[in-house]
Image 1: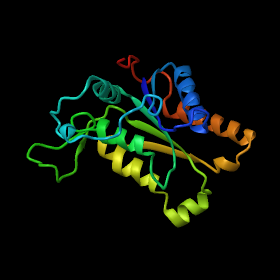
Image 2: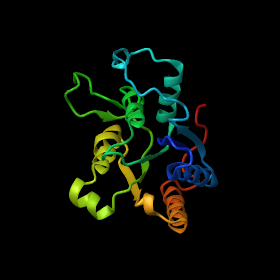
Image 3: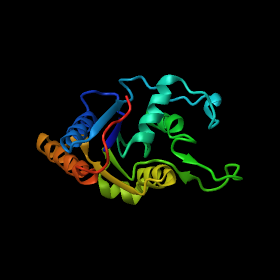
Image 4: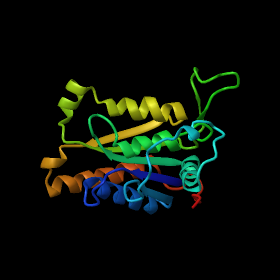
Length: 206
């Protein structure tokens, strides 16, 4: 399988980075080809210019590579902190620019954009790993866990990915080394379960 991992956290010493490393190692251990994008380290430009709106827009080569890797992915892992119930802006910009028409979704002939898009992504499973400093009961009772809707309903479902799994690790600010070790082991188990060995062919475009 081709596994695409997208990480969005500015601190290289963060637990998010540890999760990304664990996800990559677990995927490779299952025999999969892995591409890991650290959006902050790559200085990904999150601003969507008007010239990129069209499905037929001419994209810069670096953006084409992101799009090709997303289209070729058999499995997707997204890792980011919960900031105000949303992904970091750099990751939202990645969605705006890379999860684009003709790559991740399309509208049926005669649909001018008001209908429900047809999902184009090859991946059938996506795993979202989040970190938070809000206890889970408060997240559910007070905020309603908006990230659940963002990733499952608003992004992946519309792009054809129906098996969307998600885990939030909290509270990171007060976590102990032992808790973080358990969380990393849990993340490895989630990746191994989501992307078992022998499913799909390797060969992510570089």
